[in-house]
Length: 93
Image (cartoon, rainbow, N blue to C red; front, side, top):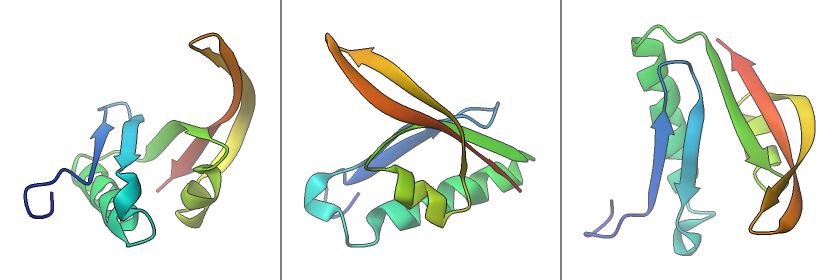
């Protein structure tokens, strides 16, 4: 949150699944997502999580790769009647 505006959020499950990772478009490219991912990984470490995974869009893939995530599966999903390509990515710590 910056000046009362929610600029990003993420949900880290006990299984290591990073779900709903989001950065507001007005704050992309300003380090918000990086700080959020660093926080998620720090929280995961404190919880003893050693394997992280997420379903990642084509545009988010390079961001996750910067944090050491690797593609383990490429898949097609359907969202509101549209077929989209995404990736299951994993990281071990």
